[in-house]
Length: 141
Image 1 (cartoon, one colour):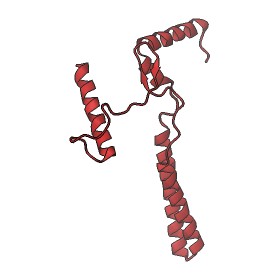
Image 2 (cartoon, helix red, strand yellow):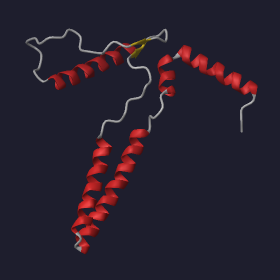
Image 3 (tube, helix red, strand yellow):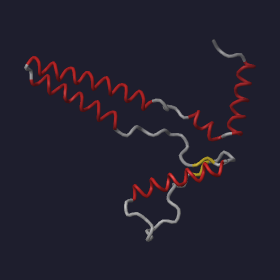
Image 4 (cartoon, helix red, strand yellow):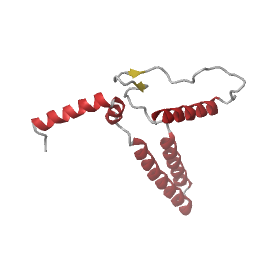
């Protein structure tokens, strides 16, 4: 059932108000494909189950080719599930209060290696992100 003109105008006004009040939330709602990883894992799980069934069927009947096909299906399902999902084409970066997007890369503050830095970059990045989140949460209260 289509919306009336009045309902369409009210909806557009609500969208504009949301975008001006909370641009970050508005961009979150505008992004498509948020649930795709879940669907990806469900489809991969079904593929894994089918592959396992074909593998067992091939082993039970003594047909090696059928068992190999089942293994390939299982492997392909798991590989597809953990492959990097395509990124959304929405704005990347930090949304400023005025609605613009800061597209600069979010790196560590203070770079370089000092005596208190760990040598593992991934661990250091993880700890830095946790500290940054903690500081943001403390600042919001």
